View 1 (cartoon, helix red, strand yellow):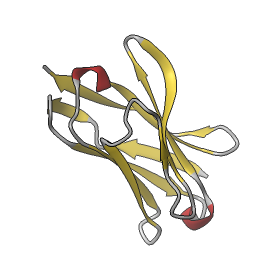
View 2 (cartoon, one colour):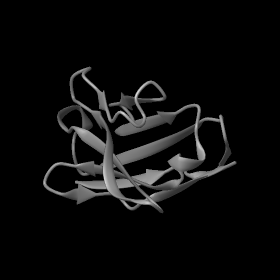
View 3 (cartoon, helix red, strand yellow):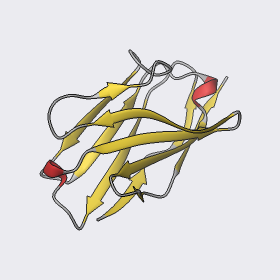
Length: 111
């Protein structure tokens, strides 16, 4: 299984962005995907889970602002980020089980 994250960029405070995690070499419908981020002031932290069932979970720091969705036909998981804050600036990673990581994608939220 390989993961490829994309969708980062520059966003204004209060804006929205969508990150994608493309899964190859596996069937997404059987693979939970986790989102992590690393910020200038925080080591890599877990922020969201996209389960194979409809049971997502979020860290308190992003709860009520971020959502996840998955498109099994496209083998992709999406992290929808709303009401972005400068402290959301960081490199975002998607991860599958067995320590399989995608490359990071940088999100910069301007104040």
